[in-house]
Image (cartoon, rainbow, N blue to C red; front, side):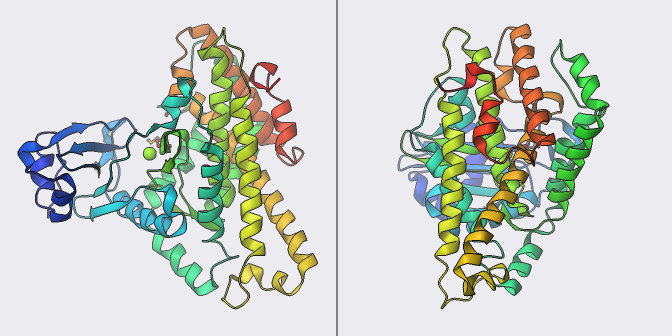
Length: 413
Ligand code: SR1
Ligand code: MG
Protein backbone atom coordinates (compact mmCIF):
# COMPACT_ATOMS: atom_id res chain seq x y z
CA UNK A 1 0.00 0.00 0.00
CA UNK A 2 1.40 3.41 -0.97
CA UNK A 3 1.18 6.00 1.79
CA UNK A 4 -1.50 8.63 1.67
CA UNK A 5 -2.78 10.76 4.55
CA UNK A 6 -6.27 9.81 5.68
CA UNK A 7 -9.03 12.35 6.17
CA UNK A 8 -12.35 12.22 8.03
CA UNK A 9 -13.91 11.51 4.62
CA UNK A 10 -11.60 8.63 3.62
CA UNK A 11 -10.71 6.95 6.94
CA UNK A 12 -13.81 4.71 7.18
CA UNK A 13 -13.29 3.24 3.70
CA UNK A 14 -9.65 2.50 4.54
CA UNK A 15 -10.46 0.90 7.89
CA UNK A 16 -13.13 -1.23 6.20
CA UNK A 17 -10.31 -3.01 4.32
CA UNK A 18 -8.90 -4.28 7.67
CA UNK A 19 -11.07 -7.23 8.83
CA UNK A 20 -9.97 -7.13 12.49
CA UNK A 21 -10.96 -3.46 12.73
CA UNK A 22 -14.25 -4.04 10.91
CA UNK A 23 -15.04 -6.70 13.50
CA UNK A 24 -14.35 -4.37 16.43
CA UNK A 25 -16.52 -1.60 14.94
CA UNK A 26 -19.38 -3.80 13.72
CA UNK A 27 -21.95 -2.85 11.08
CA UNK A 28 -20.76 -1.31 7.83
CA UNK A 29 -18.68 1.81 7.12
CA UNK A 30 -21.92 3.70 6.56
CA UNK A 31 -22.69 3.13 10.28
CA UNK A 32 -19.34 4.49 11.47
CA UNK A 33 -18.59 8.00 12.67
CA UNK A 34 -15.09 9.40 12.25
CA UNK A 35 -13.63 12.40 14.07
CA UNK A 36 -10.10 13.68 13.62
CA UNK A 37 -9.07 14.78 17.11
CA UNK A 38 -5.27 15.04 16.94
CA UNK A 39 -4.27 17.91 19.22
CA UNK A 40 -0.61 16.95 19.56
CA UNK A 41 2.24 18.50 17.63
CA UNK A 42 2.90 15.77 15.09
CA UNK A 43 0.16 13.39 13.87
CA UNK A 44 -3.38 12.72 12.74
CA UNK A 45 -5.61 10.87 15.23
CA UNK A 46 -9.01 9.53 14.18
CA UNK A 47 -11.57 8.30 16.68
CA UNK A 48 -13.84 5.88 14.87
CA UNK A 49 -17.06 4.56 16.43
CA UNK A 50 -19.31 1.80 15.15
CA UNK A 51 -22.33 -0.09 16.49
CA UNK A 52 -20.13 -2.62 18.34
CA UNK A 53 -17.22 -0.47 19.52
CA UNK A 54 -14.56 2.08 18.71
CA UNK A 55 -10.90 2.38 17.74
CA UNK A 56 -8.27 5.12 17.76
CA UNK A 57 -6.33 5.28 14.50
CA UNK A 58 -3.13 7.29 14.62
CA UNK A 59 -1.36 8.17 11.39
CA UNK A 60 2.00 9.90 11.06
CA UNK A 61 2.28 12.79 8.63
CA UNK A 62 5.49 13.22 6.62
CA UNK A 63 6.06 16.53 8.41
CA UNK A 64 5.64 18.16 11.82
CA UNK A 65 1.96 19.05 12.06
CA UNK A 66 2.57 21.97 14.42
CA UNK A 67 4.88 23.69 11.93
CA UNK A 68 3.83 22.38 8.52
CA UNK A 69 5.48 20.85 5.44
CA UNK A 70 8.55 23.04 5.83
CA UNK A 71 9.67 20.65 8.60
CA UNK A 72 9.75 17.11 7.14
CA UNK A 73 9.71 14.19 9.59
CA UNK A 74 10.07 10.50 8.68
CA UNK A 75 7.01 8.27 8.71
CA UNK A 76 9.21 5.61 10.35
CA UNK A 77 8.23 7.10 13.72
CA UNK A 78 5.00 5.09 13.42
CA UNK A 79 7.10 1.92 13.15
CA UNK A 80 9.03 2.76 16.34
CA UNK A 81 5.81 3.64 18.10
CA UNK A 82 4.20 0.28 17.38
CA UNK A 83 7.44 -1.51 18.29
CA UNK A 84 7.43 0.29 21.64
CA UNK A 85 3.70 -0.32 22.18
CA UNK A 86 4.30 -4.03 21.70
CA UNK A 87 7.28 -4.02 24.09
CA UNK A 88 5.40 -1.99 26.69
CA UNK A 89 2.38 -4.31 26.41
CA UNK A 90 4.66 -7.15 27.48
CA UNK A 91 6.36 -5.15 30.22
CA UNK A 92 3.45 -3.19 31.73
CA UNK A 93 0.31 -4.64 30.13
CA UNK A 94 -2.26 -2.68 32.17
CA UNK A 95 -0.69 0.65 31.47
CA UNK A 96 -0.80 0.90 27.66
CA UNK A 97 -3.60 0.74 25.10
CA UNK A 98 -4.06 -2.54 23.22
CA UNK A 99 -2.51 -2.49 19.76
CA UNK A 100 -5.10 -3.81 17.27
CA UNK A 101 -3.43 -3.33 13.90
CA UNK A 102 -0.48 -1.60 12.29
CA UNK A 103 0.49 -0.77 8.72
CA UNK A 104 4.04 0.49 8.36
CA UNK A 105 3.53 1.68 4.76
CA UNK A 106 0.57 3.82 5.79
CA UNK A 107 2.37 4.83 9.04
CA UNK A 108 -0.90 3.81 10.69
CA UNK A 109 -1.32 2.41 14.21
CA UNK A 110 -4.78 1.34 15.34
CA UNK A 111 -5.42 0.96 19.05
CA UNK A 112 -8.26 0.37 21.45
CA UNK A 113 -10.51 3.39 21.94
CA UNK A 114 -9.76 4.53 25.49
CA UNK A 115 -13.03 5.62 27.02
CA UNK A 116 -14.00 7.44 29.20
CA UNK A 117 -10.33 8.42 29.45
CA UNK A 118 -9.12 11.95 28.90
CA UNK A 119 -5.72 13.54 28.57
CA UNK A 120 -4.06 14.12 31.92
CA UNK A 121 -2.77 17.58 31.02
CA UNK A 122 -6.26 18.86 30.20
CA UNK A 123 -7.66 17.31 33.37
CA UNK A 124 -4.97 18.91 35.54
CA UNK A 125 -5.61 22.30 33.94
CA UNK A 126 -9.22 21.91 35.12
CA UNK A 127 -8.02 21.00 38.62
CA UNK A 128 -9.21 17.38 38.52
CA UNK A 129 -7.68 14.74 40.83
CA UNK A 130 -6.93 11.08 40.20
CA UNK A 131 -6.31 8.88 43.25
CA UNK A 132 -4.37 6.13 41.45
CA UNK A 133 -2.38 8.25 39.04
CA UNK A 134 0.97 8.34 40.85
CA UNK A 135 0.90 4.59 41.57
CA UNK A 136 0.06 3.80 37.95
CA UNK A 137 2.83 6.00 36.59
CA UNK A 138 5.34 4.60 39.08
CA UNK A 139 4.35 1.11 37.95
CA UNK A 140 4.73 1.98 34.27
CA UNK A 141 8.14 3.55 34.84
CA UNK A 142 9.59 0.83 37.07
CA UNK A 143 8.24 -2.03 34.95
CA UNK A 144 9.32 -0.71 31.56
CA UNK A 145 12.64 0.77 32.67
CA UNK A 146 13.90 -1.95 35.02
CA UNK A 147 12.80 -4.80 32.77
CA UNK A 148 14.64 -3.44 29.71
CA UNK A 149 17.82 -2.50 31.58
CA UNK A 150 21.16 -4.25 32.04
CA UNK A 151 19.90 -5.37 35.44
CA UNK A 152 17.20 -7.61 34.01
CA UNK A 153 18.16 -8.39 30.42
CA UNK A 154 21.12 -10.54 29.30
CA UNK A 155 23.68 -8.45 27.52
CA UNK A 156 23.29 -9.91 24.00
CA UNK A 157 19.51 -9.39 24.11
CA UNK A 158 19.96 -5.88 25.47
CA UNK A 159 22.32 -4.93 22.66
CA UNK A 160 19.94 -6.34 20.05
CA UNK A 161 17.10 -4.28 21.53
CA UNK A 162 19.23 -1.12 21.51
CA UNK A 163 19.91 -1.82 17.84
CA UNK A 164 16.21 -2.32 17.09
CA UNK A 165 15.48 1.28 18.12
CA UNK A 166 18.69 2.90 16.85
CA UNK A 167 17.05 4.22 13.69
CA UNK A 168 14.66 6.53 15.54
CA UNK A 169 17.19 9.26 14.92
CA UNK A 170 14.89 12.04 13.75
CA UNK A 171 12.73 11.83 16.87
CA UNK A 172 15.74 11.87 19.18
CA UNK A 173 17.04 14.83 17.20
CA UNK A 174 13.87 16.79 18.01
CA UNK A 175 14.53 16.24 21.71
CA UNK A 176 18.23 17.04 21.38
CA UNK A 177 17.51 20.34 19.65
CA UNK A 178 14.29 21.46 21.33
CA UNK A 179 15.05 20.48 24.91
CA UNK A 180 18.78 20.89 25.34
CA UNK A 181 19.88 23.59 22.87
CA UNK A 182 17.22 25.91 21.50
CA UNK A 183 15.92 27.43 24.75
CA UNK A 184 19.42 28.81 25.33
CA UNK A 185 19.83 30.81 22.12
CA UNK A 186 17.67 32.88 19.80
CA UNK A 187 16.31 29.90 17.82
CA UNK A 188 13.82 30.92 15.10
CA UNK A 189 10.81 29.03 16.48
CA UNK A 190 11.28 30.00 20.15
CA UNK A 191 8.55 32.02 21.83
CA UNK A 192 8.05 33.39 25.33
CA UNK A 193 5.50 35.46 27.23
CA UNK A 194 5.61 39.23 27.35
CA UNK A 195 7.42 40.26 30.51
CA UNK A 196 10.09 37.56 30.44
CA UNK A 197 12.69 39.26 28.21
CA UNK A 198 15.05 39.87 31.12
CA UNK A 199 15.14 36.25 32.30
CA UNK A 200 15.39 34.98 28.72
CA UNK A 201 18.47 37.15 28.18
CA UNK A 202 19.91 36.08 31.53
CA UNK A 203 19.45 32.37 30.69
CA UNK A 204 21.13 32.82 27.31
CA UNK A 205 24.29 34.10 28.96
CA UNK A 206 24.19 31.88 32.04
CA UNK A 207 27.21 29.62 31.73
CA UNK A 208 26.45 27.26 34.68
CA UNK A 209 22.91 26.78 33.37
CA UNK A 210 23.96 26.14 29.79
CA UNK A 211 26.74 23.81 30.91
CA UNK A 212 24.22 21.86 32.99
CA UNK A 213 21.83 21.59 30.01
CA UNK A 214 24.68 20.36 27.83
CA UNK A 215 25.59 17.84 30.52
CA UNK A 216 22.05 16.48 30.36
CA UNK A 217 22.27 16.36 26.58
CA UNK A 218 25.45 14.27 26.91
CA UNK A 219 23.54 11.81 29.14
CA UNK A 220 20.65 11.72 26.66
CA UNK A 221 22.98 11.04 23.73
CA UNK A 222 25.17 8.39 25.24
CA UNK A 223 23.47 6.34 27.95
CA UNK A 224 21.41 3.50 26.44
CA UNK A 225 20.26 2.24 29.83
CA UNK A 226 16.69 1.13 29.11
CA UNK A 227 13.81 1.39 26.65
CA UNK A 228 12.41 4.88 27.13
CA UNK A 229 8.98 6.14 26.24
CA UNK A 230 10.91 9.23 25.23
CA UNK A 231 8.13 11.84 25.54
CA UNK A 232 6.41 11.10 28.83
CA UNK A 233 4.68 14.40 29.53
CA UNK A 234 1.14 14.76 30.88
CA UNK A 235 -0.25 14.91 27.33
CA UNK A 236 1.00 11.33 26.85
CA UNK A 237 -1.14 9.98 29.71
CA UNK A 238 -4.88 9.21 29.50
CA UNK A 239 -6.79 8.94 32.76
CA UNK A 240 -10.04 8.00 34.44
CA UNK A 241 -10.79 7.76 38.15
CA UNK A 242 -9.61 4.14 38.10
CA UNK A 243 -7.20 3.79 35.21
CA UNK A 244 -4.17 5.46 33.66
CA UNK A 245 -2.74 4.58 30.27
CA UNK A 246 0.48 5.82 28.70
CA UNK A 247 0.18 6.59 24.98
CA UNK A 248 2.30 7.96 22.12
CA UNK A 249 5.72 6.29 22.47
CA UNK A 250 6.91 7.47 19.03
CA UNK A 251 10.07 8.97 20.60
CA UNK A 252 11.07 5.55 21.99
CA UNK A 253 14.74 4.60 22.09
CA UNK A 254 17.28 3.21 24.55
CA UNK A 255 18.36 6.12 26.74
CA UNK A 256 18.97 7.17 30.35
CA UNK A 257 16.35 5.93 32.81
CA UNK A 258 16.16 9.36 34.45
CA UNK A 259 14.83 10.90 31.24
CA UNK A 260 11.36 9.32 31.46
CA UNK A 261 11.24 9.83 35.24
CA UNK A 262 12.33 13.47 34.93
CA UNK A 263 10.01 14.23 32.05
CA UNK A 264 6.88 13.21 33.97
CA UNK A 265 8.05 14.80 37.24
CA UNK A 266 8.85 17.99 35.33
CA UNK A 267 5.35 18.05 33.91
CA UNK A 268 3.76 17.50 37.32
CA UNK A 269 5.84 20.41 38.60
CA UNK A 270 4.69 22.49 35.61
CA UNK A 271 1.09 21.72 36.59
CA UNK A 272 1.82 22.70 40.21
CA UNK A 273 3.51 25.93 39.18
CA UNK A 274 0.66 26.87 36.83
CA UNK A 275 -2.02 26.20 39.44
CA UNK A 276 -1.84 29.56 41.27
CA UNK A 277 -2.27 31.26 37.87
CA UNK A 278 -5.18 29.07 36.81
CA UNK A 279 -7.01 29.28 40.14
CA UNK A 280 -5.78 32.41 41.93
CA UNK A 281 -8.61 32.35 44.47
CA UNK A 282 -8.31 28.70 45.42
CA UNK A 283 -5.24 28.03 47.56
CA UNK A 284 -3.41 24.91 46.42
CA UNK A 285 -4.19 21.75 48.34
CA UNK A 286 -0.69 20.43 47.60
CA UNK A 287 -2.11 17.46 45.70
CA UNK A 288 0.20 17.81 42.70
CA UNK A 289 3.35 17.87 44.80
CA UNK A 290 2.04 14.94 46.81
CA UNK A 291 1.68 13.05 43.51
CA UNK A 292 5.27 13.87 42.55
CA UNK A 293 6.39 12.57 45.98
CA UNK A 294 4.31 9.44 45.61
CA UNK A 295 5.45 8.81 42.05
CA UNK A 296 9.15 9.06 42.90
CA UNK A 297 8.81 6.94 46.08
CA UNK A 298 6.65 4.38 44.27
CA UNK A 299 9.08 4.17 41.37
CA UNK A 300 12.11 3.79 43.65
CA UNK A 301 10.40 1.09 45.76
CA UNK A 302 9.24 -0.90 42.78
CA UNK A 303 12.54 -0.59 40.92
CA UNK A 304 14.34 -1.84 44.05
CA UNK A 305 11.81 -4.66 44.53
CA UNK A 306 12.28 -5.81 40.93
CA UNK A 307 16.02 -5.86 41.50
CA UNK A 308 15.84 -7.76 44.81
CA UNK A 309 13.38 -10.16 43.23
CA UNK A 310 15.54 -11.24 40.28
CA UNK A 311 15.30 -14.99 40.05
CA UNK A 312 18.82 -16.50 40.38
CA UNK A 313 17.72 -19.42 38.19
CA UNK A 314 16.94 -17.12 35.27
CA UNK A 315 19.75 -15.36 33.43
CA UNK A 316 19.67 -11.70 34.36
CA UNK A 317 21.55 -8.65 33.14
CA UNK A 318 25.28 -8.15 33.40
CA UNK A 319 24.88 -5.25 35.86
CA UNK A 320 23.49 -7.74 38.39
CA UNK A 321 26.39 -10.19 38.07
CA UNK A 322 28.37 -9.10 41.14
CA UNK A 323 25.52 -7.93 43.34
CA UNK A 324 23.65 -11.22 43.09
CA UNK A 325 26.50 -12.90 44.99
CA UNK A 326 26.46 -10.44 47.91
CA UNK A 327 23.37 -9.02 49.59
CA UNK A 328 25.28 -6.14 51.23
CA UNK A 329 26.60 -5.10 47.85
CA UNK A 330 23.12 -5.48 46.39
CA UNK A 331 21.58 -2.97 48.84
CA UNK A 332 24.43 -0.48 48.28
CA UNK A 333 24.11 -0.94 44.52
CA UNK A 334 20.35 -0.24 44.66
CA UNK A 335 20.89 2.96 46.64
CA UNK A 336 23.68 4.13 44.33
CA UNK A 337 21.69 3.40 41.17
CA UNK A 338 18.57 5.17 42.45
CA UNK A 339 20.69 8.19 43.45
CA UNK A 340 22.04 8.44 39.92
CA UNK A 341 18.55 8.08 38.40
CA UNK A 342 17.29 10.81 40.77
CA UNK A 343 20.05 13.23 39.80
CA UNK A 344 19.44 12.59 36.11
CA UNK A 345 15.68 12.95 36.60
CA UNK A 346 16.13 16.34 38.29
CA UNK A 347 18.35 17.58 35.46
CA UNK A 348 15.99 16.37 32.75
CA UNK A 349 12.97 17.81 34.61
CA UNK A 350 14.69 21.21 34.76
CA UNK A 351 15.42 21.12 31.00
CA UNK A 352 11.83 20.10 30.25
CA UNK A 353 10.31 22.94 32.30
CA UNK A 354 12.57 25.54 30.69
CA UNK A 355 11.87 24.42 27.13
CA UNK A 356 8.08 24.41 27.69
CA UNK A 357 8.31 28.13 28.55
CA UNK A 358 11.06 29.40 26.25
CA UNK A 359 11.11 26.98 23.32
CA UNK A 360 8.77 25.91 20.52
CA UNK A 361 6.31 23.52 22.16
CA UNK A 362 4.44 25.33 24.92
CA UNK A 363 1.89 23.64 27.18
CA UNK A 364 -1.74 24.27 28.07
CA UNK A 365 -0.90 24.51 31.79
CA UNK A 366 0.63 27.97 31.35
CA UNK A 367 -1.08 28.89 28.06
CA UNK A 368 -4.50 28.57 29.74
CA UNK A 369 -3.71 31.33 32.24
CA UNK A 370 -5.69 34.15 30.63
CA UNK A 371 -4.12 37.05 32.53
CA UNK A 372 -0.84 37.71 30.73
CA UNK A 373 0.95 39.20 33.73
CA UNK A 374 -0.12 36.41 36.00
CA UNK A 375 0.99 33.84 33.43
CA UNK A 376 4.42 35.46 33.12
CA UNK A 377 4.69 35.47 36.93
CA UNK A 378 4.03 31.73 37.12
CA UNK A 379 6.43 31.06 34.26
CA UNK A 380 9.15 33.15 35.88
CA UNK A 381 8.82 31.19 39.09
CA UNK A 382 8.93 27.94 37.10
CA UNK A 383 12.06 29.06 35.22
CA UNK A 384 13.87 29.91 38.46
CA UNK A 385 12.82 26.60 40.01
CA UNK A 386 13.92 24.71 36.89
CA UNK A 387 17.30 26.43 36.84
CA UNK A 388 17.80 25.54 40.49
CA UNK A 389 17.05 21.85 40.12
CA UNK A 390 19.11 21.57 36.95
CA UNK A 391 22.21 23.40 38.16
CA UNK A 392 22.11 22.11 41.76
CA UNK A 393 20.97 18.58 41.03
CA UNK A 394 23.93 17.02 42.85
CA UNK A 395 23.08 18.88 46.07
CA UNK A 396 19.33 18.16 46.01
CA UNK A 397 19.57 14.56 47.06
CA UNK A 398 15.86 13.86 47.56
CA UNK A 399 12.46 15.19 46.59
CA UNK A 400 11.71 16.86 49.97
CA UNK A 401 14.34 19.61 49.52
CA UNK A 402 13.15 20.10 45.94
CA UNK A 403 9.59 20.75 47.07
CA UNK A 404 10.80 23.16 49.73
CA UNK A 405 12.17 25.32 46.88
CA UNK A 406 8.64 25.90 45.62
CA UNK A 407 6.50 28.85 46.58
CA UNK A 408 4.26 28.09 49.57
CA UNK A 409 1.29 28.47 47.21
CA UNK A 410 2.19 25.12 45.65
CA UNK A 411 3.07 23.30 48.84
CA UNK A 412 0.81 21.17 51.01
CA UNK A 413 -0.11 22.98 54.27
C1 SR1 B 1 8.07 19.52 17.04
S1 SR1 B 1 7.52 18.41 18.20
C2 SR1 B 1 7.47 19.26 19.68
C3 SR1 B 1 7.24 18.41 20.84
O1 SR1 B 1 6.03 17.69 20.71
C4 SR1 B 1 6.22 16.36 21.13
O2 SR1 B 1 5.18 15.89 21.91
C5 SR1 B 1 7.52 16.35 21.88
O3 SR1 B 1 7.36 16.72 23.23
C6 SR1 B 1 8.28 17.36 21.12
O4 SR1 B 1 9.41 17.84 21.80
MG1 MG C 1 3.01 12.83 21.53
